[in-house]
Length: 445
Image (tube, rainbow, N blue to C red):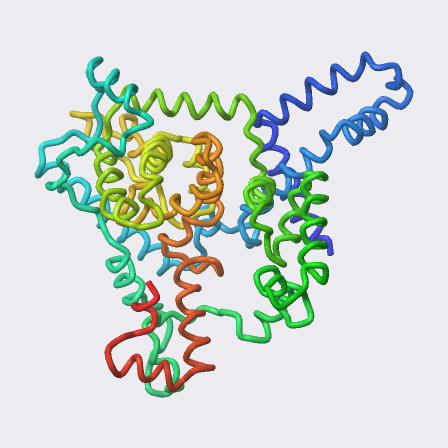
């Protein structure tokens, strides 16, 4: 009991510390000072009166949403004496595999840089800056020669790394069950079985209404759909992030989806957020990075050739180029098993005081990276809002899909869960696919 209270106090202290550096904290402070001029604020009950003012004025709800947002990315519980690297990834062999993978990616990038005699970064000439600024909203019309550039890696390369993952402390001998050897992922991680999944996704049960099923043409809308939409509108009116996340577990109405996702992610598009996006845009205009060409190449190879996403080509360039310059993204490496790659100022190789993160956000784009952004373009048509949504989704969810970790939401656990369920509940299909050389995990990825 005392340990639980101690852990809770530590969590509260860390969240308070993080919020103190946020814009919300400054706004709350200003509002608190301004409220002192109000007649209902009495000196005798100052603390309670200000808390009541925050509640009535809606600032309490904004603070709750900010705390909820921080809790969503808070590291999993660990031993208080655990070193920092254990908070990123508790299993040593996973950390080593991730470290080796990062070296491989960096080697690929540096090799391309050397082969093409192109610097990792350079300041654009004034003429080039003006040209890029003029065509910012029409970058899809540009056709640069990218024939010499190649993606640093593709999903199939990453899958090969996951397939070769092994726990050196785990005896993978003949004494183990036959089922153990069928899947591609050969690491002993705990994944949920069907009863546990039913409990976790209880809203998908047959006794609970679900949008997309219970709003079909055979079901009258007054039985479920109309009421669900009404509740959704009420949730949006309340501006409660936690309530919004609980609400969409029964499906999100198409007309409300964009607002609900923004509320869950605590994105409100304040003037300072738009200004921050413009600052990132200015950075793109002023400086050219090698990864810019990788982004161009990826968009051309993926979204531009897709029947659904080609119309969003300009949006993808705008979002991804700005994303590569956003140093705030570095914060997610505190709970990511990966580490941001470093480069050195020319002539200062090996001197840590001259090391810089490259790219500035610490994320090297790979083949297919732009497809993280593409589906969001259907919902958000304002580049700054689209950018905020993507960035928040990336630092909460997407990064786990291309980093090696034992996290339950990581790609290793997801692949293992997929194989385990298919192997357990559709063994004939699983064995057939394996026999004809079409491993289910390879087909699905």
